[in-house]
Amino acid sequence: MSRLERLVNLTAALIDAERPLTRDELRQRVGGYSDDPVAFRRNFERDKDLLRQMGMPVMTEVIEIDRSESSLGYRIRRDDYELPDPGLDDGELAALRLATSAVQVGGSDGVTATALRKLAGAPGKPAGPRPSDSPGAAVGVETAALPGGPEVATVFGAVAARRRVEFSYRGQPRAVDPWRLSYRNGQWYLSGYDHGRSDARLFRLDRIDGSVEAIGSPGAFERPAEAAVGPAAAWQIGDDEAVTVEILVDAEQAAFARASLGAGAVCSTVADGSVRFVVAVTNRAAFRSFTLGMLEHAEVIGPPEVRADIVAWLEEIAR
Image (cartoon, rainbow, N blue to C red; front, side):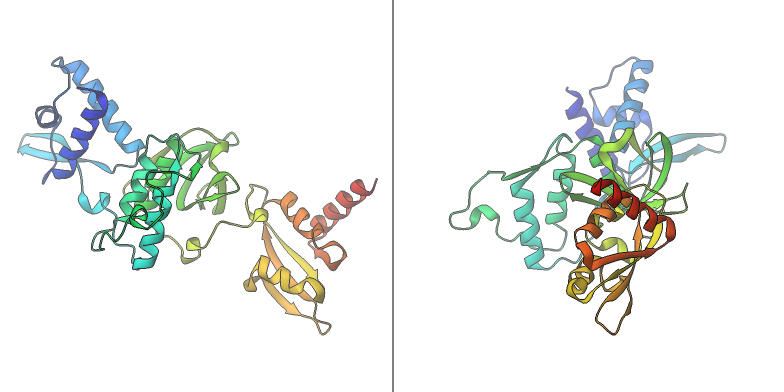
């Protein structure tokens, strides 16, 4: 029996279990393990850890054998594993099915793609027509490929299960409540609450040092409503010290700035039609580029250190 087949059988046994199963019970049900107790235990622990890295919520529970003896049991609770109905309508489900048939997520052994397809076939929703059922549709042709990797699958599972993740980022350990996984300009991004910095942060997955580990029980935190919006703006994709910047945009570019920064960033409107915005910035280089894009129609008002940084940058360009 190959390891892949053994993992599939182990997953099925854990999901179908009505009660926690001991290691010996799982060895009998799954098969494919060595008869040597030491080798079996080592391989079982590796398989269990791998399933957890893939986002499978393998739970460890204490089983009372009798009054004087207890043991450990394992199972995957269906409520923790199965995705709830996300409330997508027929049109949204059709769009999701089209996307999963046309996009290949690479480097993750199909885990992320499988999860997306699982979501597209959400319980209680009709299967609906496949993209290939439409006249002239290409069958089995993937038109786009997204980069992937083990960290994408782990983060995807942690976001869905609301489990905390731990990883090293720029040489610093991070403990993060993962809110949202998004894809922008060829990169995967994780937004969430960074416990070490007591604030929301955005992380590029390709800049994570080593692996990502999902820890703790599912449902460990509540995801804020604003986490459901699209990928963050460029000036919020960074790990600079967070700063609130005030910028004045004249009437000619005010509509563009409002569309880019959002209505919530509007601080006040001046009589001549110019608008003051207040913007949260964690990537100062990206914010400088955004401001320069409006040329003389935008002015950074404060704070003083950000304004001075913009002035010095422009003077260097002029030289």
